[in-house]
Length: 172
Length: 456
Image (cartoon, rainbow over all chains, first blue to last red; front, side, top):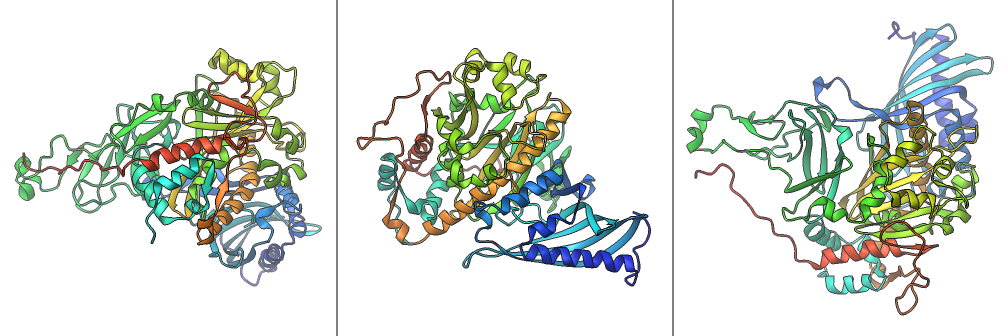
């Protein structure tokens, strides 16, 4: 897209990387109120459905269908739901670990950074069930605001066509 | 391994008592594989997924992979995805567009109607027709196929009854989900994911479990995703059984007519005249006079449907959505869920977008209803896999008295075909299980086997 990634020593890159690590810490601690505080009002949070296609097909995700396609209202409803006493699928909660790596930051606009990262989500439920793994790339748009960086857009490019996890009651 | 006593199993199920191990027993799964799926009509795809010549999707019936393809003449074909030569999977993509399918192993090539057109070194290798009769060879078509409202089904049984005969009275209900205008529906998706749950649990749930809604789905009521507290609304709905299907409905507000009831669930004014013109008098009467709106349903064996109307923004209005989902069995302990969003093809674009949002918030892998359902179903499967489950017949007799007669009279004022009762009851689940029992009691299916290309 726009040019070369910022140098690893660039303060904007360091801030973006730190944002992603801090965000992962909130998610792994189950601090969804803290997490939802990091989104912009105009956020789009999307996760296309990946599909297996021939090399020459020119597409590898479904048109018009995602695993997530969220605005701020929908994300807040999800967070509110997890805070109720009746969100059974996360009570008992999953133990999750968001591993964030391969971070590259691009200056997209005077106050916006595009940040690409690789994510591996480990999720364990209960004592006897097999854990699940979700591997994905993420392309984020982070906006510099007076309160610090905020998430304006996230596109999650999951690396499986058929997901091996019981649901997406977790954020990526 | 114990021998499966099918007769005893089916006898229990017919009493409304469900041996708990059927949700986690490899022997039961083997019986389903050998007796049920070889004879059932199984949903594969919708025609809107393959609109143009050459468009295809690859779908399965248990372990069997089929290419569902629209050929150059526009006809939909269902072709077994195995090369006639060495058995290679001919098409390894999930979807795309192709005029031909060429096997990567030895380059045998098939037109998109299935016909074998290319065998490399045909003369040198086989000596032509004498060695391998190429003329007339085709990828194996599904033994039977049929479509209804663009829904494409296949059966592994060449003697299956015609699809329309099979659907019977359930077609009446299927129309609400898949024919809201002459344009029909368009499907988007599917989302696919694998859950460690037995496939029967979801199928039964959608067939009639209105009883779980107030508790399992309490959280979505807590957060105001719905206009009214569903916990109370659910028990006023009617549950019906019709043909090979069964489903649930919601009771609509009193005093409404056809138009106002569809407005109540959020259909825009542009769509309602189309629905009025497309549906029969009886279908309109179910909404306008009986005052019921279709919700969840299952068509035996493993296609479920759902229709609901959440609030998708802070504005307070509700927006209806439709989803189709298939419970694709992987093993007695694992199911692949395929979940599509469906919407009337001629609906306004803005409605389609809002309805899609409503779907994503409620159903599919991230849906806030579906999340809690799957947690329950995984737990049931876990519990059903041990030895204690063999000592319990689960009570699935809700709505029956000790003599096995319904506790109440069927609804007299229900415009739809089949039998309907108002309030909670496990009518739909028993109806589903009774068909399951019918299949298990039959002998394993023994298919005909043929030689390919043998000299005549």
